[in-house]
Length: 620
Image (tube, rainbow, N blue to C red; front, side, top):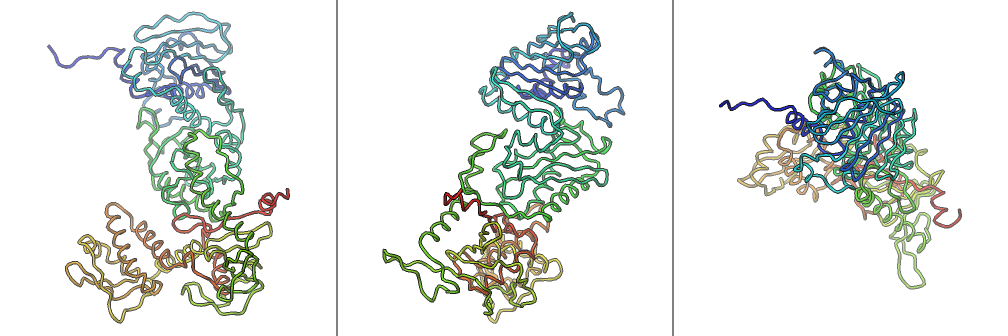
């Protein structure tokens, strides 16, 4: 008896269903894509019990005649391709001819379709291996597909379905992946008869994005556009201040189809590098348009993965269009004075609350610090902390902030070699008239429309990082030899990376020599690092180099080390700055790129408008 058997049509379709129909949301995806390919301008989606009981998709597309309807549920029957050459010129959402047969193999399927020129509609039904003949029916122009009792004949698949609420969440997400890039189509989504979404047609993608993310976030998103080297990139990117705790807020579309692609993801991550924290993700909607012969979409059954003919072009163009937009935008975030309200999104409430926690906590701490200062103390113009403190009726003493008004001729201390006191490098016009330092950590400056709160460490860290990066790209960092080399205990891995990354270490201004089996001697170090911080930095640098072992680019390694060096050398929270030092620091702010964020992505400054202040004092 032969060991190889020819599988039955039903089993073949069930296997195909396993690849294409993972859950109810997969059915919605396939049916809605068919509706879009039919030229529909209105698509209605009705769901019951999270898609277990019913999925109904009704459109106003071109419809099918009797013959096409009969063929539509046959395996590998499609109107999208007719020859092998067509595989490299796909311009439609679907083309495999697997969706309807696969759905019919694991559900009770009914399709009613009518062409606009026809006098009547036609209906076909299928359930597992049973397919009924086409019959006449009543129905408006377009197509209505009903999928009932999904996986009724595959109980093992039913067991893996989640609660109706969870499955409905996946369906809503699937709708977002389609509706965002097709704003001209009207969509209605209901669950158990209750309206979930009514997306009215619009030519403005920003309006469609607002349906999912809420108006507040959408209004702040930055529009991007570039058409170059056969690639068109359009869409919206959120400023670095608006990030989330997961990457599912990122949507990338290729020729109208949602995709996941590592080259695009890397380009996005690189564009935001140094502007957001490592564990945060930006909200981004990118629509890419490219000639079909430059990309292979026939890689994955669900068409979610692609293969580029020239992936370097994709990476460089996505990276540059986002970077250029940031370089031409003031990214300083505004500080919210009221508790943020979760946006209306396709993500879960828990995700939204988690996303708001870190930034809101930071904003709240600064608000409370400023409010506390203004309630308890009165500034003394020009009075440094050493000259006294302000008493209160209760006898307590409070730190008196440094005030800068008007400019003083005092020479600044050399608290940072890379922030020069030379008057030729300082643009006095860029510095606000009134600046105070509070809690030896924040600088508060008056602006025409309110105030600017600056984290002195974060700003100084960004300035140092940009200066170090520029120096590093041209020559080794300035260093000085030590009169007595300092010895540091290390581990074997440290010895290994000292050899592997010897050129990078030298370029950073270090001269490290093995002094013993587990000891190295530091003969030279960058002049930027204070002696007390140098051993700590060397250990941290070697630890980072060990962690970076593997397929990591030299650029990633050096950027990480330079940001680490800038952090160690920058002024700290708690360091007192005199007026001249404050002026020297602020004078550099408009001269560096991406001054809105430190190299680790934390904000360097926040805006508080006059309207926000007046609301806090109940003046509006």
